[in-house]
Amino acid sequence: MKNWQNTTDFLREIPLPTQTRTYKPVSHAVFIDEIKEELYKRGHSVKTERYLTANNGLIMTGNFTIENPDGEINPAIFFTNSYNKMRKAELTNGVIVLVCSNGMISMDVTNKFSKKHSGTVLEDLRNNIVLSVESIDEEFEKLRKNAEEMKQIQLTDNQIASIIGDMYINESMISETQLSILKKEVKTSTNFKDNTVWDLYNNTTEAFKASHPMHFDKQHLKLHAYMSDVFSLTGSRGLYKNKQSLIENAILV
Image 1 (cartoon, rainbow, N blue to C red):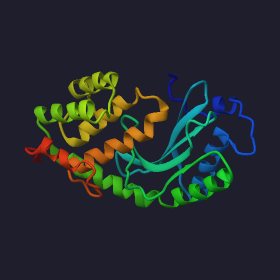
Image 2: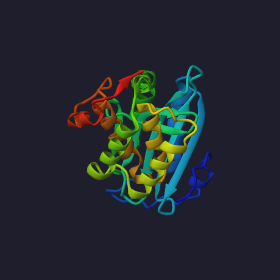
Image 3: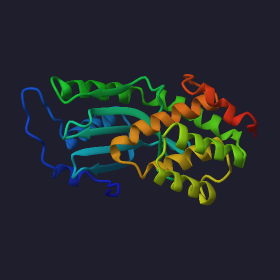
Image 4: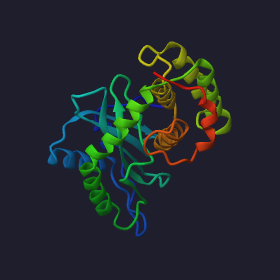
């Protein structure tokens, strides 16, 4: 898998598939340019931009980190596109943790766009980019609150092991390769080493970086739903409520 890039030059060189009566591909570069234009129009500054491709450029995922001078996490927009019909054009709000470029995406985000490459996909995409940019501040506040909640919950080594085991064995949330990365991060991370839920969350998203770009957003959505329910965070939907026995002895710091 290629490394993340911070320029769209390489994306503009990937040939756009031929349009047909039922298939209307959207250029990776056009998708990105539309988001940037709307962000600047609304007065937002892009702090960082990152892009990753797979399958010889047929699948693209990326994110924009929006300037926020007040904390360690920044608002972000995540997006995915494909030239092989394997992924829809997708867009959602989230946050980026600056120290490690880890992401957080919530199932509670009100504006998530997903559209097949057909019909009025480009027009629909533009409309949803507007909605996504308009809701940046609101969605950021939800996730900022979740981050603060996670920082207040201290875990024992046994609880961490129990949760990791459950994510791997019962939920298939992490692969064997990611399990090895996660176990190493828990032991050696210099940024997230205090055994809080926030530390475990970020160590897990660090392991997600070994994922195929196609699975990026789905893994993050599932992780956020899982942690929200296990630790009763604001916005919890109760999908994993039965997992709360894993942390019965969690201690508030």
